[in-house]
Image (cartoon, rainbow, N blue to C red):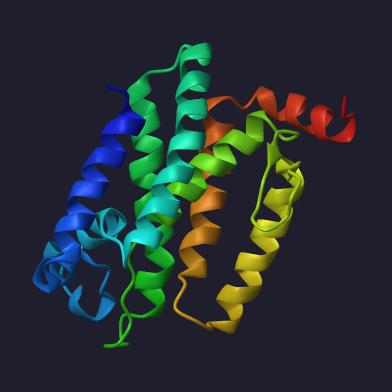
Length: 203
């Protein structure tokens, strides 16, 4: 069993349990106002394993499957440990959660859940290696280059995070994506030149 499948299986099981237990959700969700001591910091990670509903869960897990299997192949090609892939995903969830935690420590109403931060880190790790890979976004009928998707994604998430509107954690999306790029650069800094050459000289 690959790490991608393992993550999906664990996330589905925990999320499904959460659908039927508000108490479980409350114990795992990112809830900054309740995180006033280090014993509650586990929520920075566990919030990535619970979801609001089936649509939220299926979208995140399908995206993780598509990009996660590609990234695991990249790790194998680079001769890197598959455990680093697990580190990328789990650390991505934590890093993506931190800004929301720091911004909302005095807000008793703020809560956040979902794997989007970790998934964003996997997507942007992929973009570092495959900038011209086509990504399809519903309802656009044709795929757009991954590098263009990345620029639009970061711009949109930064704008929406600044507005602080809606129920979506745009901070998590943005910082998860940034962390994915950072992780890729640290893992294989020599590829940075290839990345620049690839986006400036498309085949």
